[in-house]
Amino acid sequence: MTYATQKLDEEKVFKDPVHRYIHVYDQVIWDLIGTSEFQRLRRIKQLGTTYLVFHGAEHSRFNHSLGVYEIVRRIIDDIFKGRPEWDESERLVVLCAALLHDLGHGPFSHAFENVFDLDHEKFTQAILLGDTQINAILTRVSPEFPQHVSDVIAKTYGNKLVVSLISSQIDADRMDYLQRDAYFTGVSYGHFDMERILRVMRPRHNQVVIKESGMHAVEDYIMSRYQMYWQVYFHPVSRSAEVILTKALHRAKELSLSGYQFAYEPHHFKNFFNHSFSLKDYIALDEGIVMMYFQEWMDEEDKILADLCDRFVNRRLFQYIEFDPAKDYRKLVELEQLFKEAGINPEYYLVFDSSSDLPYDFYRPGEEDERVPIHLLMPNDDLRELSRSSDIVQAISGKRRTDHKLYFPQDLLKQDAEINSVKKQILHLLSGKS
Image (cartoon, rainbow, N blue to C red; front, side):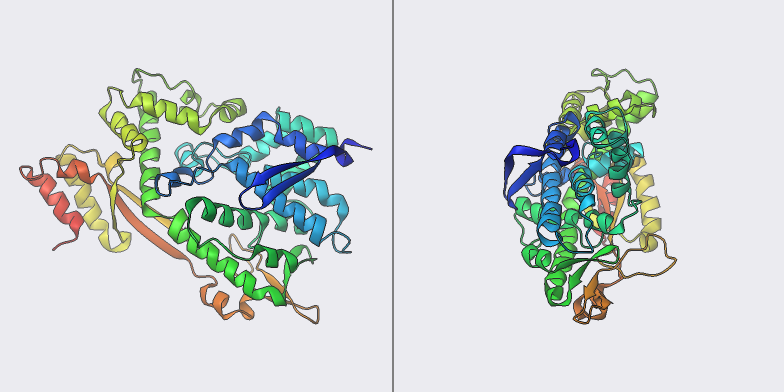
């Protein structure tokens, strides 16, 4: 028996609120879960700043990663096993890719990436291929195995069926996060009949396809995703918190690069501020460390940094209005000037933010970021693209929805507004009254 095929003496289980139990049979998977790089995901929230809106959303990337692993394990061990289109030798690589696909997320994920111009997928690959405990375990399977797992996550792996289980328009990643995020936020939008979808999944032509009889379950899944994005993921209050978090980190970076003497030096961030950080520096960061700095920086001499950190820690968030950049550009320019006159720095206190999502798309040859569509397996064994059979999906196919907001500190503007004509003018402009 090789390390790749070695089973645990006794099955290990994790009790899970979404899947009831997560089952681990393979020694490799159990060893990967025990690494410091994977355990770090316990300290990274799955939904970033959303816990400031939905107080139950405290779940972690660790929870989600186990969930994606469990869905893939069920698909390949229960649904695909024994089918001629499924190559059983791919089992371990797809299980490892499912488990490790979010390994490179930083604290508060996308906000952190935006500030430091990072890509979590590249850091996932760096952890898989670098001098890490994860890499040591994967290399025990074979010298090439870390690269194979990395290729699956990078979507460059030769077997596209394997890739589609992790990354496609109906994959294990989405099926877990929709249900998990709905559970922890307490909303009903993300619920769909996953059991039905799993039962009608089939391996075909380098991708997962769905038996035609399961079309309505897939419609429900797509609409669940659509609703979750607009009701939870793009919630304007969560975005307000993310704006403040981003601006606080930007301010700390600006101060550090200008030679400002911090009362509490940003030792964990300095290499990020000058873009000279190592993989070890990256792995050392988690959300507990960020919050530690923010709590210390609430007492910094720099009033902007202190205020932004206090706002984030104590949930004193920015107000927002709908804002159309095409129509309202002149208003933004005028507001920026008025903010300066009022002594409020618009770079940190007047923030335009937009969110955009494409709930489902069909294949358009030659287009950038083309998406492999969901195919239905017809009774005659032909494949038909989903939107050709579903009126519901056809209605939203290829239609991108975008939302724009302008964020500002209403509390600062209302201070002395009765005697400050500039602040009064700003509030008037933001109210939209003519």
